[in-house]
Amino acid sequence: MPLTTEDRLAIHELVSLHGHLADDRRTDDLGLLLTPDASYDVTAYGLGIVRGLPALVELFSSAPGDQPAGHHVTNVIVTADPDLDDRARVRSKGLSVMADGRAGTVVYEDEVVRTTNGWRISARVVVPSLS
Image 1 (cartoon, rainbow, N blue to C red):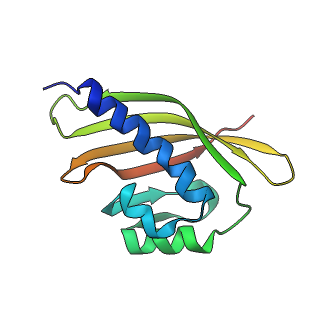
Image 2 (cartoon, rainbow, N blue to C red):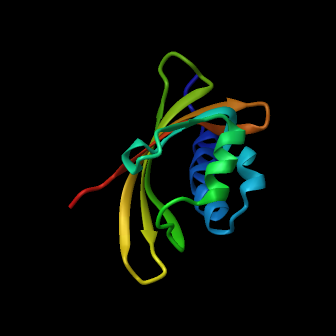
C-alpha cells in the first residue's frame, strides 16, 4: 500500500519537529521524534554514530560544539519503501542560524518507520553541505 496523504503530512511534521525540540532544548521529548533504538550519524562532526534513545538524549543535552540558535528544515522529499508499507526514506535540507548571524546548511538522510505511536525517525545521517 502506498503512503497516504496523511502519512506524508505526518512525516513532514515529524521532520519539522526536530528543530523545535533542539531549539527549545526539549530533550525529554525526543521519543516523539526518534525510535528507542534510533541511530544518529554525526560522523562528519567528529561524534560518530550515536545509537539508542538514552545516548541520543545525552547527545542533545550536552550540545557539543558550536550549536545553532535556530534549526530550520526545508525541501522535504518522502520516498516510500517499495517493499515495506511501514517505512520510508526522507531527504531534507537543514538550515542553521548561529547566535552571531552566521548560517550553515546540511542534508538530513532519514529512515522513518510507522510505530504504534506514529511515525518516528529510526536512522539519521547528517551530511554537511560544503561550499
